[in-house]
Structures are given as C-alpha cells and as structure tokens.
Image 1: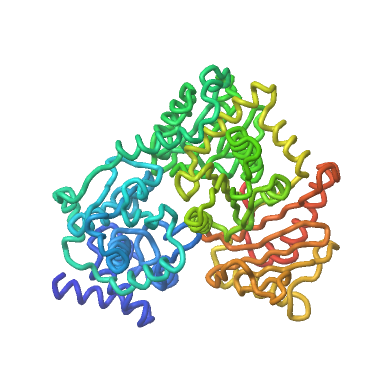
Image 2: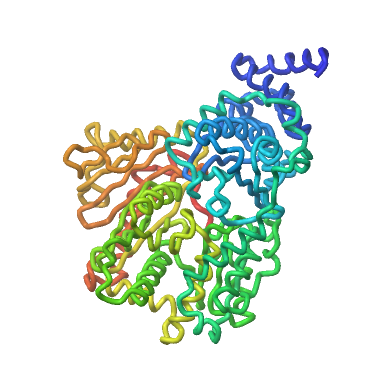
Length: 595
C-alpha cells in the first residue's frame, strides 16, 4: 500500500470515534488482500456503521459445540481468507509444539459446498489457505473434491482442518484454548506467499487421498452390515436427499456395500449448491417444511422411507409413510435397540454386555439410560456437542471398552465406532437395513418404536428454540433465572416442585452432596437443567453454533404406566410455562421457530 492510500485508510478509520475499533479496522485493511472483503469494510467505514463494525471486529471466532463456526464475510469474527490464514498459522504453531513428527505425518484438509458470493468466499477457496501454507511446511492430504467423512485416522495425520485432532474427534479442551491463544499470537500473515493460491499445487508434499480413503471407509462400513442377504432381496424403496451438499455419492456407495440398489435421489437437491436454491433452510432437522420435495418424490415412486442428510452429511433425518418425520430422540431409540439387538445376535449368552457403552448428550432423551438399566450395558451423558462424545469415546476405547452407539438429539448419530463423530452416511444405510429387517417381520419403524416404548416406558420429548442475536439479553435472561426466587433458582414449574437444578455454566448441581456439577463447567455458554417432582427434565441453553436459546423437555414413564396422550399433555403444559415464565419471549423480543 502506498502512502496516500494509508492516509485514506487512517481518515476513514478515525471516523468511528473508537480508538480500539479504529486500530482493528486499520489492521484489517493493511493485511487483507481479498478485494471483496476489503470492500465490505471500506463501505461500512464510509457509512459510519460503527455497530456493525464492532460486531465484526470486537472479538474473534471461538470454539463452540462444533468447532470454529461463523458467517462468511469480512471481519475477525467472520470466516474469510484472512481469518483462515490466521487460524492456519496459529494451528501450525500449536501442532509444531505437540508433534515432533508433524512434517512427515501432516494434516488433512477438507471442504464442502458452502460459500458467499458477496465476500468471494467459498469453503473450497478459504480452505485452500491451509493447503497452500501447510503444503510447504509438512505433508498435506487435500481432497480433490468435496467430502463428508473423517480420514485423519486412516492417514495417521495429526490434525483434520475443520478442526479435528489426531484421534479423529473434534477438537476440545484443552487444545481449543491453546489453539486460540496461538492464533491470537499469529495474526499478521507471515508473508505474501499466504495469498498465493497456486503455491500448494506446486508442492511435492501435497497429495490427494480421496480414492484411498473412500475405499477404506466403505470397507469398514461392512462391519455395520448385519443382514446383507435380506438386503439383496428387500422390496423396500428409499428416497434420499443430499440437501445440496456432499452426501449423494457416498450414500449411493454405502447402499451398494449393504447390498441395496441405490436410493432414488431428489434431483433438485442432489448436487452441491452453496445457495441451497430449493430450500428455505438447509437443515433437515426442521422436518416437513424442508422435506417437501423428498416426500413428494417418495409418494410418486411408492418409496416407504425418506432419508435426508444435511449439507455436510453428518446428520440424518428420516421419514416413513404416512410421512411421520422422526425426531432425533425417536431415531436414537430405534438405532440403540438395533445395535444392541445385532450385538446379541453376534454374541449369544453367556456374552456379557457390561463392557459395552452407549453415549448421549445431556440434552438428549434418556431412553438409552433406561435401556442400559434393563439390558446390562453402560450409559453415560456428555455435554452438548459431538466433540464431547468423541472425546469420551477415545477415552473409553483407550481403556478397552466398546462404544456401540452414540447420539445427540439434533439428528446426529454414530453407529459403531468407525470414527468418533456423528456420521449421516453410515446412519442412513443402517436405518435402511433396520427398515428392511423389520419389514420381514411385518413391522414398520413406527410400530417398532412403539414396541420399544412398551418395553422401556414412553419417553416423550419436546425440543425447540427461540432466536436471540443480542448477547446482553441472553445474559439478562439467565441471570434472572439464577435469582428467580429469593435470590436462587425457581422452586416450581407449572405447579410441580423442582427437585434438582444443574447449572453447568457455574458448575452447580443440587443433586450432588457437594453441589458440584459432574459435567465440565462451560462458562462461555449458558445451560440450566431442572428436574421436576413428576419426573420431567427440562433444559434451557444457548446454542454453541447459532444465535438461539434452545429448550428441551422430556417425560420418562415406567413401562405401562400411562397413556401417551396424558404424558404429552402434561409435558406440553410444563414446557409452555417454562418458556413463558423463564424466557419471557415477548418481553425479550425473542423470535419463535418457523413453522
């Protein structure tokens, strides 16, 4: 930059009247070489948009429940070329300290379909930054095409840049805090070479593992196939939507591994599209409103099961004719039953299930806990986010235990232990095989779910959210809950006494003798759970990835205790009162979930 341009930058920055903000925007304009993101900042400065500039420059991205996540665009709190360069530099510094053989083991770099035209950012473009930088420093396994599953274990790399550790699990404490510290110490791009998009392509250290890893993944997938002979002659037809993401080819291959013909793809949503043109929301968790094309296709081709993977294919939605869309908790009940059923088929008595584990996040259904009590396997809860499940899986595996199944209620499932993270591809084909097996018994998924609840008791749950993009409002809401009655938590809800409070944010659990929470304290997010005298457990928490306050409630009944309609009515009332009295949506201008 020449002297005149620098002077212009100083003039624009000083217009905010905030010296700290001026310094950060000035730094940005001196470092960023992407003309589109530079242009976004220059326009905001010229318009005097101080609040928007503060939103973009007053903080950095932080690790939430699913890694470093943010919108694409200009600013230190957004994903863009510069922040990925900074992250790459900081991550390299930290990896160099942790692994003396980083140069030979290398890192794995992946990307998907997402992007933003206004900033010129795409997943492929921004993730070529780690490729080009690491490609001159250590081995890089860089996919030639968009991919969906983990490969760091197969390739024995030290890190998967999306960001996963060498265990194959998402990065978690203490690594996340140390990586952030290294990023903050490595903000200025090391050289102009950071912006040379062709640098890594010229490096002999860069290789493409796509074919090798795909083949290895499909080979390992065979361990989850229990009834291939039945699959080969199954009359069922399946519809699959990739939600404009990366899942199409891998779901097709997985079906072949299990002996099925390929599922019928929703043509409008089969191929990657960063604009998600046919969807109002690219999240299959939203249910009927985003599955319209899939359900319509299934009707036209007489398919009984609809499978929808999200854009990066790590989550799975399932619908069954008459088009019941299963919740994540309901699918977990089915998949947990299925994995245990087949383990017993392969390990008849006197095989002991006491070394088997199933895992779930603490905001998910307790159905696996109930199963464990009756069936003799072990169950544990983790904090929300599959990074915590993955971390616990690695610990259990190192101790010689087998994790048979794990899930989070937001339609994230892991059957077996191929990788310590949720996987929509393997879950999709496992659901297909389970459906085909049940069909030979003249049972639907819905009927089998009812049978599970008859055996273990109905577990009725409600999950939803309210949008809130104002951090002070969120803090005020949860502070009020903590001093709701006589300076402490609520003592009742909808006429039911509160018998236990667990506040993970401050590390409090009234059910423990020392009142200390057994789950890790998470001061950076809000989460409070209440257990009522009638057995309902309800949780309020902030999302680690989106501007949402989520709420979860569940009623667990004893086998044969009550009709499900009575359970549902009581749960609905408790949930309604909980949200209305503790979150006060109208007063706090919270926006409800779209229908």
